[in-house]
Length: 159
Image 1 (cartoon, rainbow, N blue to C red):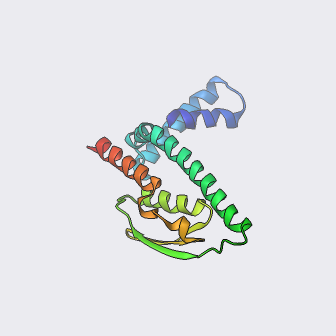
Image 2 (spheres, one colour):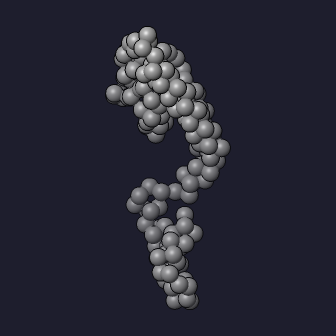
Image 3 (cartoon, rainbow, N blue to C red):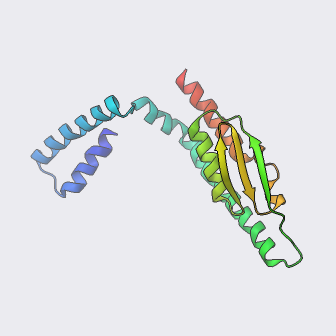
């Protein structure tokens, strides 16, 4: 993070001189100290992010695939006059522990066409689906599996 702050300092200054680099090092160090002291930032959390990067990339890829599949399903509902959508509310409980994992799951559901997360209370999700077909298997979706895998790796990292 120090190098990112320092790089931003150099970019915003527009030129590189000895004075600018000297002050940039001091300001970057002070900002990093402030972040660690008062904003609960730690280098361990940043290393955890690098450790989880392969899973995050896989999660993004799965999200894109699910968005495409849901788009096709919604398009089929819209373009087929004989298909009548049956909207449904789905309630399910998840085993996810962290707030970040629940946030990612809620946002992934909302990003997927035809579904929207209505509420999240503790471990209970309420999701509105455009059709019952979109609601099938939501509590055991690929998103939940990947998020549980991320939480397991995070738990290993913290031990």
